[in-house]
Image 1 (cartoon, rainbow, N blue to C red):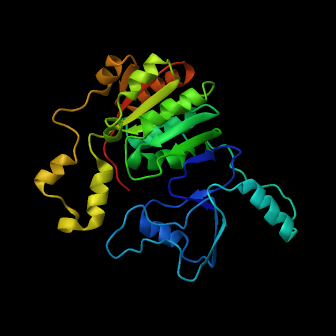
Image 2: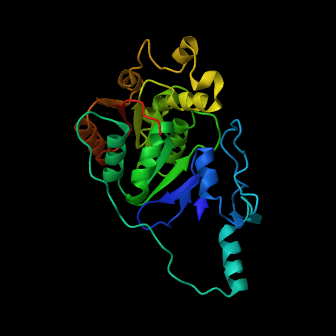
Image 3: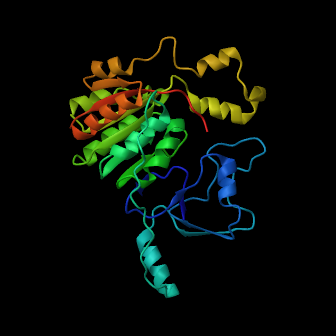
Length: 294
């Protein structure tokens, strides 16, 4: 059982169903389902790659697979599954669920691995996670698989800037739940004014900025196109870096009324994240991390 690459909303962590996500990279997604003879879609579309790449198929379903749309996105999927079970005379049984498995904490100089470990280790039950961490989000997704039960909201299209406004919406819709907004530094700059709304409405949102001072996702996608041998020229490369001057997210957040701190070591981030999870109201942590792809 798998979901789309970016499911709009997914229950994850302890007690949730064991469900994989299709890999983001087209080659990995193709390999993931290459041996299927039947592909049954429930509220999902026929899977395609997130971007088109030279010499890589865009449609993920293997040629030999029979693709059946059992239920569309607007259908009552629970009712469809119950009707299917009744039609087949299937016996009820306990579903496989995820067991709690909290990772150890990192130490020393902060990196995305250390941030992801702390998030998974300390995140409280029923947190709503809004994931727009892009390349850094890969590690959060891996470590939070066995975290306390939570919901994850994902960007479903190619545009960026969704994360902070979505966190505002989640906090207004669920005022009794902690909202954790995972933001890449480049993505955050598209809709940074959402911080002001968080402060004005005193929303219980913790924003973690993965500050690697690069548009790492764009660097990855440029390399995958094969243009110029996968290596941009000096002028193009400079447009994929976020610096000169560096962004000061602590000052930006404080200027809009949000309490903010900066972390450069795992120990600093661990302490700041624990404080953010145990207090109410908007908070931002500027996590200074090296860029890491793959």
